[in-house]
Length: 276
Image 1 (cartoon, one colour):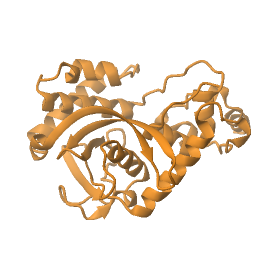
Image 2 (cartoon, one colour):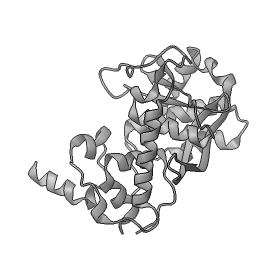
Image 3 (cartoon, helix red, strand yellow):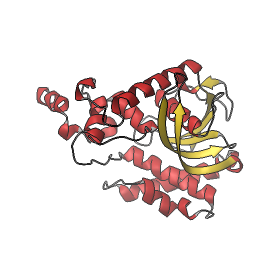
């Protein structure tokens, strides 16, 4: 068993979706398996890097396009060069159509890695680590999301509002987004009145802005889930019998067209494949 020393938004979402994957990739006595980037994930990484590089304007050598891609981009598909070119064009469009101008003077940090011991309402202490794409107004996490570049139909995620208007709860728009941004808000030291902002970029230079708060009951439930996860996985307390067995499906095991990296070790997946 390999001890886990912190929880990140991505590791929590993996555990929430499939506890077996957390066990097989992080805790079982298996060789380390790096997480594969799908084409969609890789394009998002390229766009993030390009936008951060533009905001940075060479001031911080760690935030140049080359360094950011080296840190975050590990895609090895045959269309790698095509994705890099596509990402470059998306960044150009975002800038040329004026979307960057709405936030660039408000950015106070980029690609910010933070670690914090978060104390829950029940008094539990959970170590949290995250990398925040951007921080605006000194305490508001900001993120870019790409969507629709690998499908015939591309529409905005329901729930977006006017730019920077805090009118809806992020957890009513997307569970995954709400988890990510709330944990980022904790890392920035916010204890209440959490605010979040993001731009969703679609083909043909279309951008929807999401700017919202979070419901308190969602925050309470997330803390309870994190307490359960930490109790289950930290140190050497993990027991195989505690794992919720997965229900294999294409959406779970082959999400975004990328086979789960734990599939080779997962008996439930093998049984499912034999029945297909």
